[in-house]
Length: 91
Image (tube, rainbow, N blue to C red; front, side, top):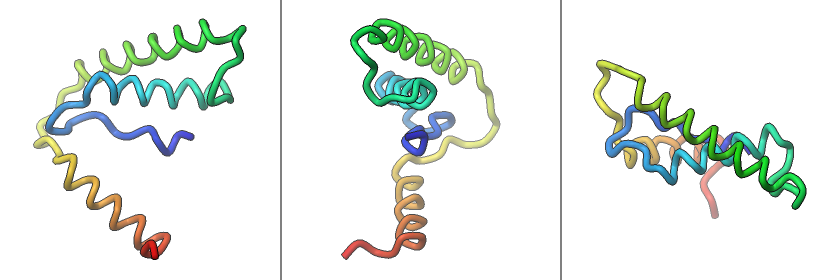
């Protein structure tokens, strides 16, 4: 599950609220051990996602760097190239 958590910092354009929330959801799913909580745990699960997303956004807002922002498309190309090398080209 955690493979879906992407680096969100220092990209142009900056990470969107949806991207931050998706990463928070993946984190809570991993820690909670379930992709979908039971009805009894749904409220706690949703609250945890909200809190992790808020903490993540605060972190992203507070970080500073002198490095130039990375380009999302270029990073996606690199990831595809690494996957093709690792797993072979899809037929």
